[in-house]
Image (cartoon, helix red, strand yellow):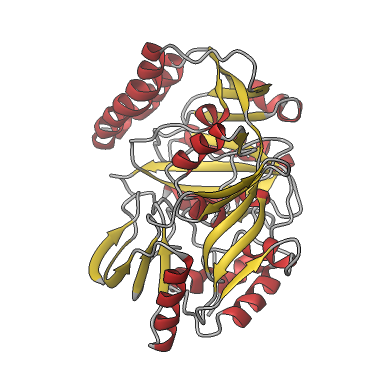
Length: 435
């Protein structure tokens, strides 16, 4: 073991004075957990550290999963794949393509581990598509006493729905079985538009596309829409020319955007004019590429994020409220507001449990305080049906969350049975689930 210091990707959560292990097998995870339980220590697994909340903050022992990686097996008939929990999405996606398979949906960042993405409710966008947890068909997990369990169609199948969005609270997942689909291409169309024009026909747009999202630029009336249509993998790909991809996605979206944020963090009065200019620089483009190449984007500008899930019929009102807020000039914000959509699912703590949902994600540059911006948005938009993304920043507590999830008490009861001594606990889990 080695004592380490740790901070998450955004740099807003840190810890020190804990031990570190890097298990390579389920058996090694089980041995570490059993030892920790016998000696009264708490254990937290960590993948990429991309959660903005303190959900993965270590206490006594951190298990780093970078050696617990790779696709274990796949079934060509069922299109199911077994994958180890520490596998990065950016490694899994090309490997699936080589097998003729793909994830049905993905979030917009591929640096996460598969376990971190699933356990916190990463969702992506798509009218008829759930988040990543909805594709989980089996889970192998180490419990607090060091025993290994597998939940699947034949063994306590209800536990799959319970443990998929597990927050790291029920055990340490070492392997998933995922329901994939045949590999497919996406024809992407990105285009500038006006906020009101999009909101007025939003249900029609969302329901008529395989994947749809848009970005609203604060202090303007402008948005950038992204529409993706599925094509067979055998059709002709037409990716962006290398120069255009470099210009748009590396220079403008990352290098130049970093520079803009550094300047405007020192001179915030410039932000409204800069946002107007930025929104106009983004032009229309259409291209066709592998699904995972279209759905995910490169991110080098560090930021902090909070995200609200709400019933779809509330999202237009939420965006108009935000527009009024930005126009008042209470806060000046460079980062666009990201809006996405998913289908309902049955995962107990999923932000889309039991309902089709819309998501409103807000961001702040990592060198600036996210407050009072994040707090203002939650005060304005926090209706009784609004749920926070588990991996992103929020201040809600168990008492606030209980009424928002029908299966919340069922999850807490299961946690009490599986981990009565809170071997997998930390202060954040105590906040959101109770003691």
